[in-house]
Amino acid sequence: MKPRFLLSLLIGILITAYIYSLSSCDYNPHRQGQWLYGQHCQSCHMADGKGLGELIPSLNSSHWLTSENIYSVACLIRFGIKKPDPFDSTIITYPMPPLYDLSEAEITNILNYIGNHFGNSAAYINPIKLKETLSNCPNEESRKW
Image 1: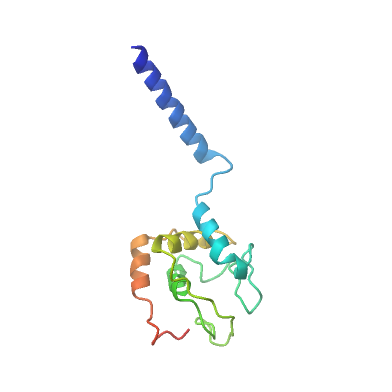
Image 2: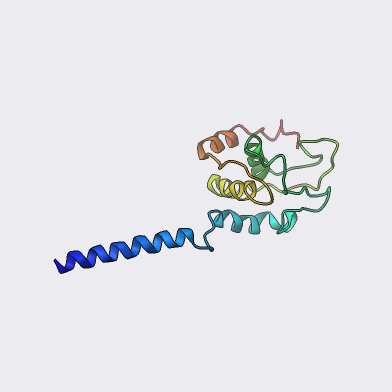
């Protein structure tokens, strides 16, 4: 009877600790996306997402980081951007280097982070839809950016 009580007590403590960790002030569901953003995006788009004026676009309240448009940003992350801006040809932007080495999961985490920070509120990325989007990105010859 005593081992069963100790096992129940241990399980109860573990469950309580897990629930506490989820509800603590330190909980961050976008931890990896935030780290990846810091490693790959922050040097140009800045820690606050404001970019550098017209040279490097702001991510703050961006109409490209909405649930309807965020998947198209995956192609920009994977293949980069040349001049002019692929979304608005009247804007000349600084080129964005491609990030070929990022996995689909890492791109998903970056999109979830930037899509839900900097004043954006996009839906969470569906990995299957992201994979489909990346496989349908324009190829080098047809890419206008």
